[in-house]
Length: 291
Length: 291
Image 1: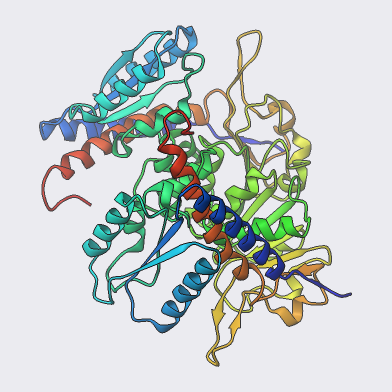
Image 2 (image 1 turned 180 degrees about the vertical axis):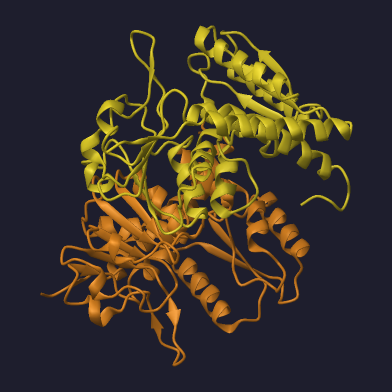
């Protein structure tokens, strides 16, 4: 049988257009949506990625301010930068880009990002709010998985979605979003035993483990929708997901490709979240309209 | 076959004794562990429950301050009371007891409880911290499930634990605690379809749905360990769990009873968390010892 490839490209463009439309609406109200990206590394691929966010933002009519503190920034430098951006009313969204200098813990720093500007859902408070159903931004990657499944009309309510990976960036927030959508969720990981115990009977399998080739065709059923969140760079420089694509193609019902799947949707969601944050912040300034 | 009944009573006494020992250690250091319980209801069974916490605290050498704001307290009254308790260095732990007056939202108020005093893990920030592996108190009921499984040497790593119920008070925090212990977790709920799809093959089934008789013998295997978190009061005043005990006994390998199971462990954990909070707060006052 042939496995349907679920490309994220059309969806990414739709979301970019939506962000663009919202940005124009904000401009019409005299507001200038602005995303700040804090960087503290010399790593070339990170700078390449940050510039790609900047270009996408500019195309959508969103200002992007790159705050580069250099590879020798301290945790205090980064905390001060984040607090300054929190206090700056011209900044609507904040991303703290990893990797950080050796010895600087991202986990501690993200707690400084104001929840209303935390458009990549990095602050533990954002995750907690997501868990209790209060307004908050989910990590863009986790949200991208939901968007791509919705885009292809894949039902979630009452279905069993198996999430491989228990990270605070993807696995856990994605599971919360799936519960909101009335799925039954299963989280497995490197220490939970043979994957096929869970994946063989799953309606949807999402792999977010960061291990190239982790999920193969023997793990899934012919009805399975497989979403590949992995982004692994091979020694030859090529980008692959966590799915052994060659073996899953021909077995599963559908598969998101890497590249061109979830990842392509993620950046567009960062932009959309920024415009949403800008709108919410402008409302919060007008008494009686805060929600 | 006979189903082993996993009583929580011995464990509850052990934890109470541990809280008592820690309270004595704190007293020896000139510290007086104190738990504050904020109440705003006329409901008799709630007052009965709060008095049972007070008695247990006193037996363990912990002061219990009941802050009764009356059934007509406003959200503002409650927020002020919580902030006062946060600022009061003689208070180590804070519980906001439900039910609250009509129109007052617990979800909003618990965000006011300082995380270091949030000994029942009610603040969304506590839940978020739990999710990212930062120090925080889990809700006592969720922690009680782990403690009772540990007490009976039931392995969790690599096992499939099915949690029925997706509340922010039990289902979600318990799932995070189980992931920390390397279990594969499945969360199902009222809208996830037939329970037996998940429960029949589970190693451990935890029911926290708040529906008397929800889980019956037909749902589980003979190897299953069943943990009943439910506390439902029947019209005749008797207390039952979410498990149809008569049908699960004789099928499952083991079952926690209601009453005398998880619930009996929960109060003792509130006391232990209070002494732990007191110890952490005393360390935070000495420069160089804060964690």
